[in-house]
Structures are given as C-alpha cells and as structure tokens.
Amino acid sequence: MQRIACALIGSALLLITALVALLLSDALAPGRVPPMLCFWAACGAGGMLLGGLGLLEFSSRHVVLPQASAGLSYPRAGGAA
Image (cartoon, rainbow, N blue to C red; front, side, top):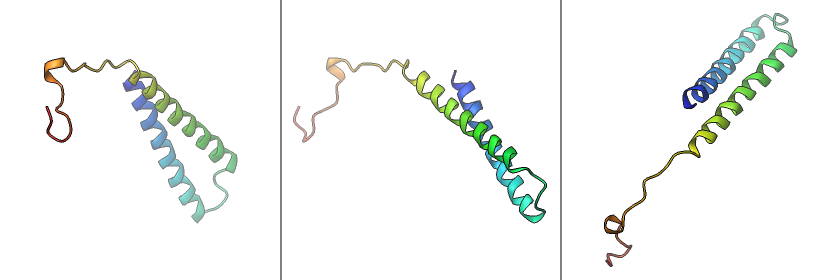
C-alpha cells in the first residue's frame, strides 16, 4: 500500500514539474497550450497527490508500536528513579 501511495505522490510531483516546464516554455511562444488543459492537468495532479497522502495516512494507522516493558521504561525527568 505504501508503494502505491509513494508512486502516486511521485507521479503527481512529476506531472506538476512537467506542467510548470510546459507553461514556462509556452511563455516564449504563447498559444501552444490551451489553458483548460493546464487546469485539468493541475487538478489531476492535485487529486493524485491527495490520494497518495491519504493512502499513506491510512496505512500508518495499522502500524503496531512495541510497548515498553515495566523493567525497561524510560527514566523520569530530573534523574529520580
């Protein structure tokens, strides 16, 4: 599940980077890229980013953290045992 989430996040960041590069190159020759294409690409990238972050949050809820035993607990603050 984490691999899918990381793949979604990486794909979204790659799409955003490509979109920024496309818009910067379009500034030199206006009219090549329709604005609605950029809008829908940005919406898709945002959806993938939110989906990936949601999957990461969902998978982190099922992690079982080990409990500290009574004899191996951390010392109290101030040096008192």
